[in-house]
Amino acid sequence: MRSRTVPTRSAATLAVLAACAAVLGGGGPSGAAPTGAPQAARPAQQAQEQQSRSDTCDIYASVPPSSVDGPAVKAIKARHSLVIGVDQNSYRWGARNPNTGQIEGFDIDLARAIGTAIMGDPEKVVLKPVATADRVDAVQKGRVDLIVRTMTVNCKRMEDVAFSKPYFSITQRVLVPKTSPAKNLDEAIGGRNVCVAKGSTAADVFDPAKNGAKKDANAHLTVVENQLDCLVLMQLGKIDATMTDDGLAAGQAAQDQTVRIVDGDVQPEVIGVAMLKSSPDLTARVNQVLADYHAGGEWGRSYDRWLKPYMLNDAEHYWPVPH
Image (cartoon, rainbow, N blue to C red; front, side, top):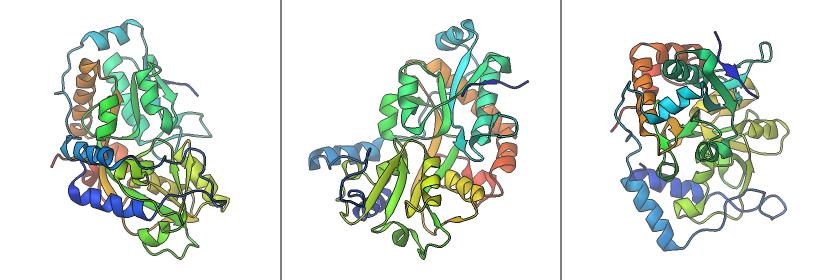
């Protein structure tokens, strides 16, 4: 039965981010900043505090796995519905099948596995599409219980929501049209019109307030609500490049044969399941499901089905291992 569906960074990593941010930013083609563009840089002291926090937080930290139902899980079961925020626009991760109307993909398999394990009945699992920029807000305001939507674990987000143990390792990559002469990341983004999703880690790469780097006034940044909007803008010839994580980049390249991923990546990261910080028992239950899902081979089978043809490496390369 189907579930119901409703429409640490190291010093070296920070240095790479600073270098990327230094070649990006600025306003749109007319010179005015596009809607949603990052704000001006914070004072140096705040930038240093941001860097210090990034250096010290543990993105692999989470509560130990447990199969025990605590108060948060019992409350969810009492209302007979677990609501999971997902994507419906990312090919192979979470996208609506036009033939069946169902949302499907790697993250969707995981969301259904988590939901069914906790609720014991897939009919009590509701998949709710959530925009990239709304993920944290949806959790904090109780519109969803969990977010399973290629959500990068970072120090800032760990202040706002709780994360499960990571379930996928990624890096930031850049997509360009196949007609682009760009041979590497620097050529693809330097002085170009670059598209990112609002609230995404890709947007943080270009934000001098978070990376402490001065933006290049000759570059342009287009910020959209969902990363698929970047692909549409690229198809229309309105942007030169898109930055997103390598999983989503691979999905876009598979979805549209006129775009390609350039050589070079930025910022190794991990993604996890997000939920309220006040519900540690729910986090523990999710961590138990993740451990069982991987150990039982379901994670690998889902990877082989949805992602293997489009990714650069075998499945275990992407299973996060603390270091």
